[in-house]
Length: 282
Ligand code: NAD
Image (cartoon, rainbow, N blue to C red; front, top):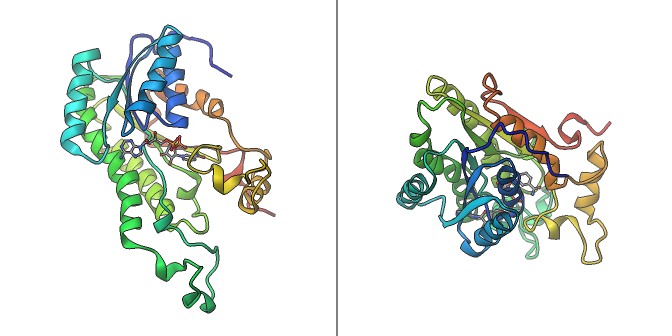
């Protein structure tokens, strides 16, 4: 459900990386509904433009920018273009992120028989390039855009950086060591940067979404007929509220953390997870 307009963010400028994706595209629309001018950044310009079109169609203000979060010079150029288009950035959401099969084991637990099994991807088969890809995309993909945009935010009270962590950051999920480690790095970096920027007026926080059905995880969680996979079922059983999240479930936290009146909140990583991280399973 959309949040009603409260005027607190009217006229602000937001830059959102991964803004063409499911969750960050939703964040872009939610902020635009609050009167924020939104720079939608994505590697995939078409998906960023589709988000922008949906915002323009409802009377909001947004522009799409092609930007790879791993290319520092490109990010600096895009930040300069956004500055010229809208003025200094007030809100940076570091949303680009994801996993890669090459950094993922096929089985949750190891046994010695897996070493010679051709159809099993064991711990010993993890590919360095795949792990490197996931660490770079998530961690450097948060650090580099922050370097590019935070210069505009220095000394501007009420400005904020919002990173996207994950449940994996608290306790790693089986099979995905690279993604878990990379998201843990984002939580850690959120705390580090909150302290580092504490004298600048920039607050730094993170949201840690639980399990939301998106392009990235749909095939892991749902069978083609729409029923739950074994892993999807495990997640639902471990989620006390008994369901996957919907993007709109993140809105209240998004607006709360971006709200300039949340001026004493910095360095927090907020789980929005239906109770997943609170539940031991017993
Ligand atoms: P998504 O795949 O829908 O969106 C990710 C977007 O990032 C895509 O549009 C993609 O083009 C873009 N992107 C990928 N590499 C990029 C790069 N190098 N530079 C710029 N853009 C790039 O994913 P989503 O589920 O909406 O996830 C958004 C964020 O939320 C990610 O950081 C993800 O790890 C995190 N997250 C998702 C869930 C979930 O359940 N979906 C849970 C916790 C955290």
